Image 1 (tube, rainbow, N blue to C red):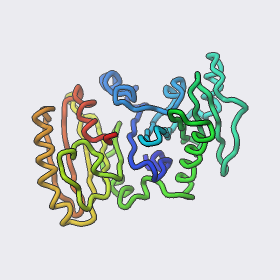
Image 2: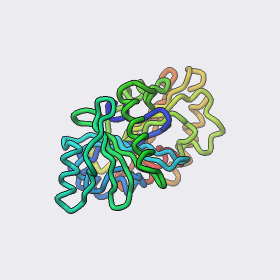
Image 3: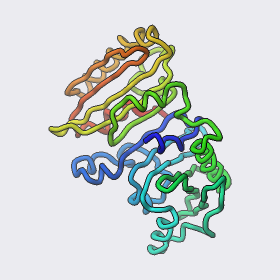
Image 4: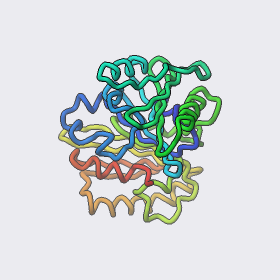
Length: 277
C-alpha cells in the first residue's frame, strides 16, 4: 500500500484506495463497494479497471484533475493491446520516456488521459475536465517525481507514513493531510495540532465491517483536547447510522477510532471518513 500511495504528490492532500482484487473475490462486498458506488472518479479507461488489483484515487477539486495510481500484473502496454482487440485504439504512437519510465498519451472515446509505468507492477493514470494532453501528462510526470523522490509526496506529510503503518490493512481506506476535510469532523470548530488521518476498512464475520482510524496530532495535549469532541461527533453519527460498536482511545499524540457497522451500511459510513470536496 505504501508503494501505491507513494505515487500521490503532496499537492493532492488526500487519497482513497480500494483493493479491487479482494472485492471481486467477495460476493457480498462486490455488490456494495465499487469506485462508482463510492463516487470515485477513476482516471483509467473502463476496460483497464477490470485488470488492476488495487487503485488509489486523488482529486484536486480546484483544477478538476484526478490521478489514479494502480497495481496490476498486467503491463500497461498489454492493457492497451487488449483494448485494441475490442476496437479501441488507446495507445496512440506508443510510449514516450520520462526519467526512466514509459508514458502513454491516450484519447479514450474523447476523454484525454495519460498513463505511465512506475515499476514492474505499479503505474499511474491521470485525467481532468477541460485539461489538455500536455496538462494530464504533467500530472503523470508529477506522480512519477513523487514516486522516485524528486519531489515531495502525500506520505511525506509530517507523520502520515507512520499513521499508515500503524493501522490494520483493509480492502478500502483513506489517507489525508488536512483533517478538517473529514466529514466526521464537520461540526468541530478547528482541529488544532492535527497532522493527518488514516482510515482502513476490513471485513468481519457476521456481515460486519470494521473501520480503523488513526488521527495524528503534534502532541499529547492536542490529542487529548480533541478526544471528547471526537467522541461526541461519533455519538451524533451513531444516531443516524446505528453502529454495532464504536470506541475512541488516546495513544500518545494520536487518537485511535474504531467503528463497526453492518456491511450494508458500508458506503454511507465510509463517506464519513472520506475527504469532503
